[in-house]
Image 1: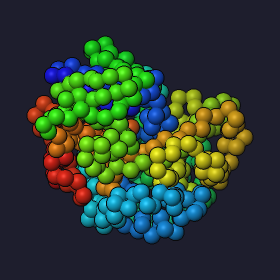
Image 2 (image 1 turned 180 degrees about the vertical axis):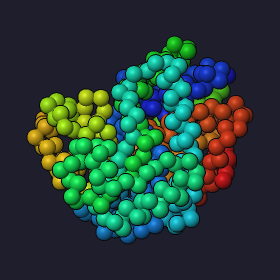
Image 3 (image 1 turned 180 degrees about the horizontal axis):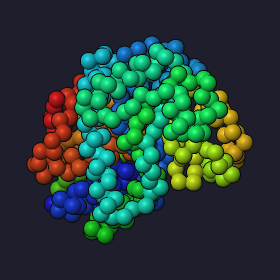
Length: 426
């Protein structure tokens, strides 16, 4: 069966891998000159079941209103974006109830717990090198109330397979000695031993090469214009280089999935949320963290990736503008200072890689995986901040569904989405 995957980010390439393994003749189309060069390039780098909770959660709407106009806000809604996202915003509000939030978190966790072993299987088969580290992740807290809430949320998910350990401030330092200078300010933390780290761009590039060895053909520097539909059936895709025909089309274009499908009258609730990161060489910072540290109070993550360090911790709703904003970059760097005072001695912004990318976020905070109302047209998108975490699992589910197999993963019922776009419901 001939299949075209639109998008060569980590989700698209992983989808191509599993489809090829299932016997499809696969081609991949992407506008970039290589794989993994957009949102898959500069994400936080953590593969973590520990962060599966959607942003749509109780209390978040009020926080977003309080953060309006504040450049150092962890989630900043630009006024100019509001007129274009009202429908998505209403869906987001509807998912901020405790019941919906818990259901969506469980759905993400189930997929994450499939995704990690799927990733490990791919690596075992292909030998891809991507700066993988398996030391876990520590999340630190300075508020007893916040730590107690985090423990309750983790305990709820532990019943579905989340592995976590509540730890004291001294145990935080024992696990990550770089926290010694800030120990007196901590009330404790949560340690997630199963979480991993890796360079998503390197993995995606390596997996694309492995796909090519399986016969997958990649068409880079190719712009998707629109889909070719006839009699309720997908026929192919029209690009700037001509028509490409196929039996199945899988749209895995991240935030650009929604505008492409809108051209044929299918509305999917995916909206871009900009993330930024700063990546710099560890260099002479010998006491830098060796495992990722997520600071709950200052809202940042400092992640070692090989011999590099990456600072991430920003979400900005501003439409399809992916350019990093100087004020947002300065804000996340400033937030690192109280926890790791040495960072400013070792971070030369002129030599660092400052990156911005668009996370494809749904109101539910869960990805859309399934067939659309158009026969043969499928979607694997909307992974939000969990693209790296959920990529291999969602690709495996998508491939199973196209072949008529039960993946064992129950996808959530979506509010505001036509039922036929979802392959399964919880």
